[in-house]
Image 1: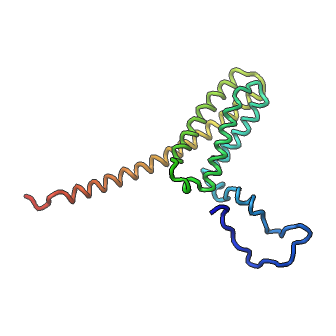
Image 2: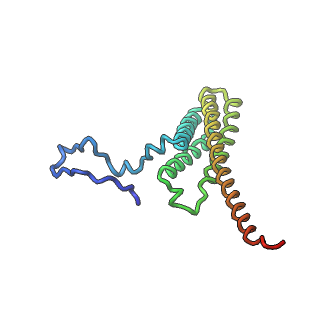
Image 3: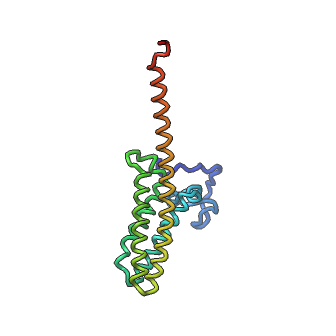
Length: 186
């Protein structure tokens, strides 16, 4: 299961490699296993998680360089959480660890991140006058928008899933009611 199965080399060359160089198509299997799949990174969820990670890191660096360094813990925490969810989604840990409610954890992460970024961005822009604080506030507003888009999409997916579950329960209840009723009685 781990690391992902790789395709066998169709024509292994028994001859030794030239002076420590690997063939042009060869990749290091250990490092390749840690990279998310290209298909996931091109998906909407992958792009959102990449944007969240990038904006959180940029905001963190801006807060480190500014006089508003009291706010640097929130972007650092959100950066680490976004990276965790990026690799968890890319490695499909939500399928492997069924005991955790992944959509709810991701939804709560996005909601809290959007609220915290909004609050600290307003404070950084309004209270501090240095350029790094203003830049951190602006990137924080962009991060707020990205996190808000993410939690909106998660909310729609969860609502759609729950709506399908409700209609399935109604159908089974209607079928059970029809079976239990006497259609012969006048």
